[in-house]
Image (cartoon, rainbow, N blue to C red):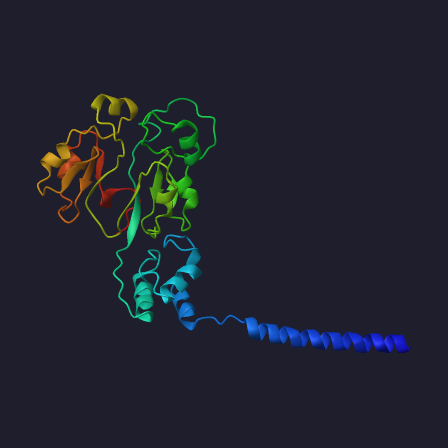
Length: 272
């Protein structure tokens, strides 16, 4: 009977001592949550996409609170959220929403394959393993690395083998662009209108371009020559459009014999 009583008293004493030690431990090692960090965190989408360059939304919130990151570095946030975040740290935000555009029209019908590919069915795997699956070394391989990387459901694989961007869902986080080993996904202002070169073929020999992709830009320069606003320059063999000059007249689109240029507002996925 005495042994049982002693055991009960010992267990109760031990429990009391442990509870006291736990209380002291919590008080000594307690990490207070910065109110400012919490308020900033509430303005973030919680997608943890990494577009800001920090390890998730929590990391970015802490960096903004510590003035180590600009409040407008999160491109996924709405303009209202960005403005509120800037106000919290006493700064200003000048963010221009962007969307992704796939600069390639090398579909299954227009871009010829090198042969039968039997390797890892990812764009990056095919790039590393065989240098690509198509004769055009710069074209989309169509395995959908970008589609799988998109956290917002803005990308889907088209029946022609080229990814399609839904502008209404795209947040401009740039994750898809980072996943593309071909570098064919470009970011443009969300409200932008005007011409865009849907080609990434850097081959400067016309015959070689046509041999590898029927829809490839043949570097004739007709678009730049015919543009009444002088908004087009050729850089690395690809038409580059100055949107401050482009007025969506469509002259370059009509002048392009390959139809490599399209007006953004008439491209698949555009949603004004």
